[in-house]
Length: 569
Image (tube, rainbow, N blue to C red):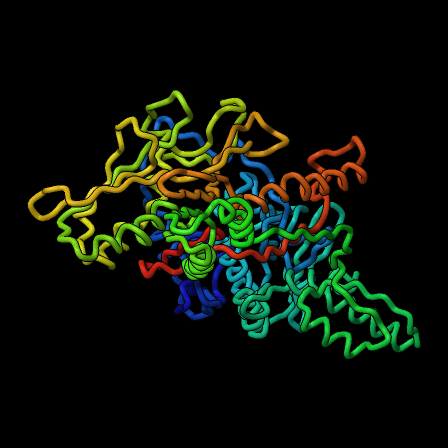
C-alpha cells in the first residue's frame, strides 16, 4: 500500500501530535496494511487527511428492542499463552496495554500513550505514526489522544533517539514502558519491519508459541525436553534409565529406543493392565445343529415331511451352508426336508428378499403392498407422530420398568431399503412398492400382497418377526425395556409343530456379558479404588476399557448407495 500520511520537517509540534493521532484513527479503520504508512516529504497532507477523516459519517442498524448483549454474562477465558510472566512478544495481545473489558478476546481500549518531545526528529515522528497506526489496527475501541500529556507517568511508548534500533519492554514502578531506540532513516525502516511482522516468526509460528515451546522443553513437558534430559543422563553414563515421555506413536518410540538402547522408553500414558478376561460364545449355527440332533432327529420317521424354520444372526452364505447340513441330516432319516433360515437382523428384509422374491420371479407383478404392524406393548394400539419418529438419545426413568424404549414404527424401519432391493431384483419401480400400516388383529409383523397389472391379488404371505425382551440396563430397571432381535428354531413334522425354541444371537450374548460381567467387574475395581468416595470429579476412573470381539455376524453390502446389512454397523 502507498504511504497515506505525508509529514514535513517544518511541522510545528501541535501538527506533529495531530499526525500521530491521525495515524491512530486511520489505523483503527484499517484491516490490513503494509508499513511504513508515513512518508517524509517537503509538503505534508495532515490537515487535508484530518478533514477527510473527521468528516466521515457512519451508520448502524438500530438495535432490536429485545436484544440482550451476550457480553453482560461473559466469563473470562484462560489465555492461550499460559506463561505467568510475559514480555515484548505479548505487546500487541490482549493484556495490560490492550485491555479486553468485555471478554470477547479482542482489545477494546488503549492503556498506553506515546511520549513525544517537542524537539523530536521528524524520523521519530514517522516511527510514532507507524506505532500509532498499528495500535489502532489492534483495538476495537479507543478514546482520546494517543500522545501523552506533559508529566504523564502511565504505560507508555518512548523513543530514545539513540543509535542502533531496538525495542525493549521495561517495568518502571507501576508502569510498563516500551522503549524504542534508533534514529534517522534506520529508525523508520526498522520500526516498519518490526510493525509489519511482529510477533510472527513465520507461517504458523509466533514468538509466544516459540517461548511456550521452550518453556515446555526446559521443564520437560514435551518430547524434545524429555529427550534432552535422556541424552544428558546417557552421556553421564547412567544405564538403568526408565523414560516415560510424551511421544505416543509406536514407530517414533521405536526410533527413540534405537538411539537410547540403555533406556526403557515408553509413553507416559501407557496403560498398565489391571484386568483381562476372555469369554467363549457358542456359535449360533452349532447351537442350531445341536438342537436339531437332540430334539428333532429322534422324532423323525421314514417318509415324514419335515419343515424346519430358523432365524439366526448370520450372513447368507453361512445360513445356506447350515441349510444344506440340516437338510442332509433329515434326509439320512429317509424323510422329506424343507429348510428355511432367515437373518435375525432385519428379518423383514431377509424374509422378503431370500424367500418371497424367488417365488415372484415367474409372476406378472404389477404392484406390491407391504403392511407392517405397530411395535407396541400389549394393550396399546396407538401412538403419537412424535413418539413414532423421534429417537431417544437420553434415557429416562419416567416411563417405569415396563416402558418400551423401541419406536412404534420399528418394523417399518427394519424394512429399509427393501423397495430399492425389490426394484433391483424384480425390475419393479420403487413407486409401485407401497408401505401401509397393518390394521388387522392377526399376530404378525408383516403382510406382503402382490397384485398384477389389473389390480388382482395374485400372492399373499405373512411373517412374524422374533425378538426377546430385557431391561435396557440391568442395574437400572426403571429405564424400561428393549427388544433385541433374537434367533429361533421351529420344527414341523407332518403339519404338526413338534419343537420350538429361542436361540440367542451373538449380539444378545455380548450385551449380556458386557452388562452382567464386564461392567460389574469395572464397578468392583472402581469401588475397591475409591471406596465410598466415587464422585464425578474423579473421572476418568481408568484410562481404557478395550473390548475385542470376534463373532460371526451379517456384514454385507446391499448394492444400494453405501447401505450395509450389518448388525455391527
